[in-house]
Structures are given as structure tokens and as C-alpha cells.
Image (cartoon, rainbow over all chains, first blue to last red):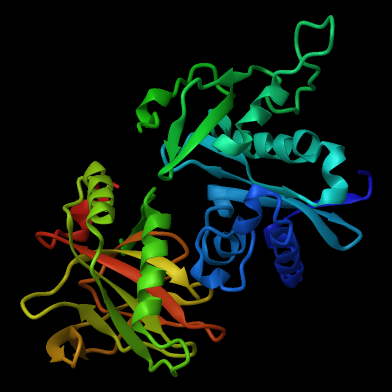
Length: 202
Length: 182
């Protein structure tokens, strides 16, 4: 992990490196999210990451940030954070996270991306930072609840996401017309968001 | 004020529909003239979703929607939006492709307008009475509520064609009236 350098997409000088990264990710067809990374007609596919980055502004300026992990000049992972559209004090982190196969054992979301996203959320006056899951990866929520035997809470440092509190919304919500599951950390305890207002209804 | 950012959750749904509809209506191999106007007929469910989100901002329902495909390097003539009967005052534009490094530019000066009808378009051409100057320019990289009853034009970048979706609203509301609620 020590060789990894984290930059934002803005700081990436050769954007073709990101195209290559997305293209390679799209070839890993056993991963459900592969089809959302790149297609040959990505300019016509707003759901692809490459379209989102190239043609949209969600992850830039005060709206959000998109981070890349670079190992000796090669992009090996990516993840974004942005202010949600349903409330501009609720940030959504860990978006569009993709880790190259060889780097998946390093815990990059927990150790690198999510702490950066939490920091970004605090610096941009967000009161809550949430991460979202689809039905197919909802089981990952359990990994945030794991405790070591004999300990009453998970081992986290102050920079880790969920250091101060861990909250789960026990019903699905609708974000951009998609059913999602949510866990979140409250950054400002005086703030209370009513998740029922975006509850997913069949 | 010329514009105001607007957050639309239905943005991606609009993009997917608009891009697919444009691709059905233009020949991808044909050389794009300076500008092509694409008329959209929204599916009922999408129209309901959009109108419901517009209502949350007190914006009236969609009157009609279009996309404009502008070829790279090209510059649109300065104009005011309009149709057969009146000047259009406000719109929401959503970038689809090629909007990085392209701009909508507003101009100031004294002017008269002349209505122009082309085979598939109606707009109000500006006849300047005094020298005009650039007033404001905007790179549209996310949905914006725009004032379109002041002289403006669009400039494409030099890399790719610029695709922009636009919608106008029932009752032709004033920009300022809508912006107050966004």
C-alpha cells in the first residue's frame, strides 16, 4: 500500500489512463458492476462511469470529488463522493468504487477512500455521510458491523468512517430512481435527516 | 442573473432517453451541420416523473422538450428563444455530450428582435442598435435553469459535437420567478 498515491481525477494529467482502467474493469464480467464501467459506445450510456466522469460534473468542485489510487503510474482503484441530490448536507461516499483484482486484499475502501470521503464531507459542511448498496452487494453492510472476539466495538481510528457512530436504515430507499440500502455516520449530532422521506416503495 | 444550478434526480433518466432518441433521429455517419434540432416526445411515465420533480420546485409542467446537436468548432448566432407566438423566457438545459469547454454566452447592448422561421425552427434574431458586449458565459456541466429571453448563443468546443437537452414550461414563466424557488 505504501507505493500507492491518491490523486483526484482533476489532478490526473493523462486522462487516457482512466479510460484504460475503466475498459479493463469492464472486462471482468463476473463482477455485477463491470457493465457500468465502460462500453465501446459509452458516450451513449449515461450509466457508465466513464460517461459520468467525462460528461457530468457531480464529482467536482463543491459538488463532490473523485479519487484515484495510482501505483507506479497505473490506476488501480477509484471511488467518489458527492453531495446527494435529496439533501445537500448529506454526502454519499464510496460511489463507483472499483478496485483492480490484485489490490482487493488491501482494504482500500476502509483505509484510503472512505476516510478521504469523510474528510471531504466535513470540509464541505455535510452533516451526514452515507454509503449505499444495491440488492446484489447489500451483504457488504455486515462487514461494517464485525467486531473482534471479546471486543464490544469495531476497531476504528478517528479518521475511519463510522468512528463516531454507525447507523443503518432498515428499509430500502430510492436514490435517483434506484432501490438502495444505506448505512451512515452522523457528523453533526444536531442534524437529523428523515430517511422515510425517500423510502423505496414497490 | 442569467442562470441557476438545479439538482434533478431524474437527470440520468432524461439523459438516457434523450441520447437514445437523438441517435434514432440522426444518422451517426452523416456530417452534422452547424446545428440540428431534435424534437422529443417523452414517454408518459418519464414525463410524469419529470413533472413531479419540477412541481417540487414550483416549476410548471413541461410544455415541450428538444435537444440541440451543435457541431464542434461551430458558433450559434446570437438570438432569443421563441416560437410562433411568443418569446420563451426560461428553460432547463441538461448537458448530454461535448459540453466540457463549450459555452452558453449572454450578451448586452440595445437591440430589436426579428422573428425568423426556418424549416424546423423559430427564433428571434437580434438586430443590435448599439455595439454589444459579452455579459456572461456558462459551461453547462450539470442541469441549469436558464434565462433565454436575453440575447445569447452557444459555442461548441473543438473536440466533439455538443449535445444539449432543453425543456420549456407551461405558462412560459419568468426566469426570476422560477429561480426564487430553486
